[in-house]
Image 1: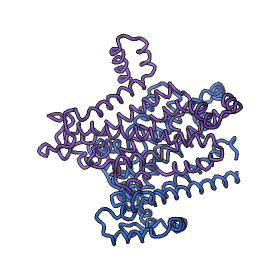
Image 2: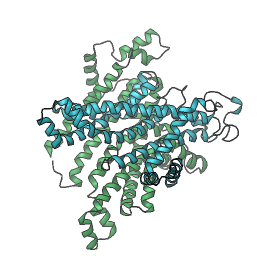
Image 3: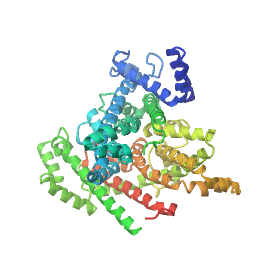
Image 4: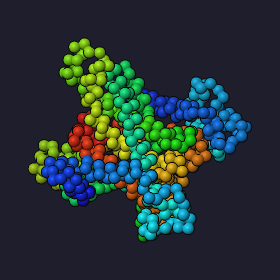
Length: 294
Length: 313
């Protein structure tokens, strides 16, 4: 990890000319910089995928299970498809699901959390409902939803979002409960401000920094759950290459062609690691007291 | 105390009832006719009608819910569409492998995580601390199926120390049973170890900065008792809380680990039910696993009084 951050620091300094302040930033926020560089690399690859050489769907049966190197940088899978191209295309599904789940669960969780925190009557029933949603194991809920509809990226996003919402609600509610007693909020109430205005102008801003941090952790966990679902056959449909279904379709060839499993596996672990590093970095910068994932 | 337990039990019942409503509504909120979805694309109208009768989908929704929840409360989780066997029987048949895996995982993961966390806090910044950080980062980032195949590749395929996959019932051969559980338990436990080790380290760091630790050191308490009796015991409440919350991680992990290692447990039961769209099985397993999670967390909450006598309800 120190290697990655040292690399990140020199890269950054070189790209902006010698800027001591930037180098200082890179050293102080090593995890933010290292995670950001890994993540940015994957985002660029995912966006540029159609223009890169190699096609994820073309089969070359004559060269099935070719080891990495000759012609195919990461080898081919059991159907003779380019593992590197499939791994790059797999990043698209993972990053898209991660981003969409983070965005939707933050928006929905923020709305419910503000209501639960600000309106006392709504608090208890909403929180019991959230407890119930948290008690259902996320992967099983997603399996149930996917088994009732057809497998698609939209279903997967909805299925992963539902169990993430309660975490956001609890976080927002705890911030609201803390802020509600602050003198400036009391002053606003005494000044005759209406409830919606108090919530939006005086309470909402305090929830933003912890929510940004939470969004990165949700993104990381959504990428993991999507890959798990695709691996179990309840995620992205087989015609869309994703890291999970690549590993699932290659598992019989573990001993003969380990690259078919470990290329998407390492890519997956790297992306999740990068998102977690960005989250840790943001947490240290935005809110040192925020406990991780709780 | 009794009043508190009663209140917690009441809220547990409310939460489980809401879980039931969610699971029940899921089937009915799905777009389209649930019977047709479950029957699949090539079903005849007669098959669809058969499934509809079997699931009681002809009746009004509230009536269906009453009938269904009454059955669930009396221990009837419905009948598998595919095999026509009661879901409780199917779960019962698969209980032993899953329970073995869960207990093996807990037996290794909790002690390892505590030792790792305590040592990392005691020697913060040392190589032990960094090693525990690496375990934690890997545990949080590498999904169970990637770790699982890596372990199979290294320890089963290459080194041939352990069997590649499968399960031996404990009644058949105890040594074989244990050999088959080592890699799955390590795989399933990694994320759990990471979670508990990090929270142990964090709370221990706080406790080790307290005055009474300095006093203990000053009066010559040996390092071992100081770390365990003075520090770890006082760091107990957050750690136990996370051990309880982390069970959710284990439940999700069981499904994946059993698939990777081909263990015929409850997790595999669910995964096999996906392609057959056997919704009663999925529904039943969700209810059982959610109940396990909620009950474990209730026990955890009640255990606070034993760890910390200052907590009184």
